[in-house]
Image (cartoon, rainbow, N blue to C red; front, side):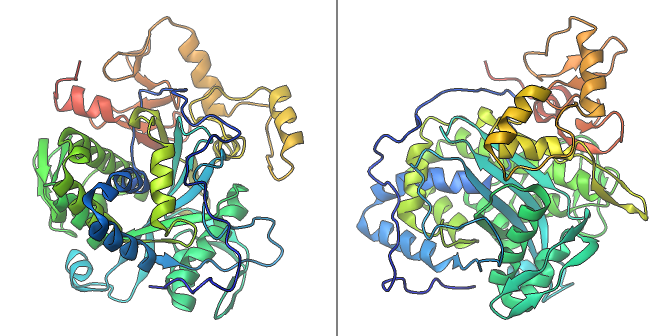
Length: 475
């Protein structure tokens, strides 16, 4: 863990903690999306912190110390046009881009036990998600990058030297190599540098959580309910669950997030969909138990969450986090748009994937600060936006992706409206379509797949809960 160095010798621009009006409204109810895949630990934490001050000065001081102790330094990269601020201003009226990473660490008793004693000393990015909170705080975008993606990355400068540029390597090795060179600071620095290079998204902040942290958060709210589409037994984690709605404790919930071979096709992309679903269920659990209005439970959850996180210097300030929470006071979880970046088979290795051509459309949404579920831009509108954002790079802005265009055409050929409970469309051939991604939905598992590549795009969580497990929908 890297503690933040004293900054008394330099001028630091503080965030607008008075919550005064900015150049963009912070109260918009704006865009609403029924696909509420909430895989955002960071959002939960910041929302909780806005209530923490009501617990008294002692509790506030303690949480402030916990937050500051989790600060990690990001090293500036030579020739990078992206600039990081010392402290994030959550009320500046600008979009916020954050990398959320789930660290596959076996260090420490709790992490080692969850890893079955294998791999102690290893540090990989088990899960990587890009989070964008809109400028007016009315919606957020969340995109998962599979750890088995093959990518090429630039050289990375750390405090302990330069890691050379590499070609055709697994995405999760970026975190591992950075950690081996310079601990969590090197890991986070190299991840941010690589993702900026791959997506051209101006990311300046990050949050990391490990196995033990996830387990603590789940236990702090008394467990989490999930829908298991088929009975399974995983020999690697030792987890066995029966089909149906199951209540999982922290250990079992974390094992569910980690399992890969016992359920589904054994791919990392399928696991990513389950991880997104699990954390959404965690968010629902928090809301259903009214933890936000229960001081004791709220404090326990906030402390467990914060103690398990490591974050960039710009986020590791309790006033910054409470300011962000306040700016998002009207945000609804239903406005969280989520998916996995489109991928396709990597030619040299069938067990690996690479970004599909359609991936650039996802990055463009982040660059242009648009909801993921907004219609694909036309050639003229995309060109206009590009002229105003010279940093944005795209190789095919004038056409829709094969997946989107073919699926949209097929969807337009019938008059079926999305089901009010599951949000899915029934096509003339009886297949289910997710109108947000134009992917096909497996009726048995709820997994959404690209109709052209066959690779997962996410999970239809409302369909899984209500159609597969029969949970009554709330009116």
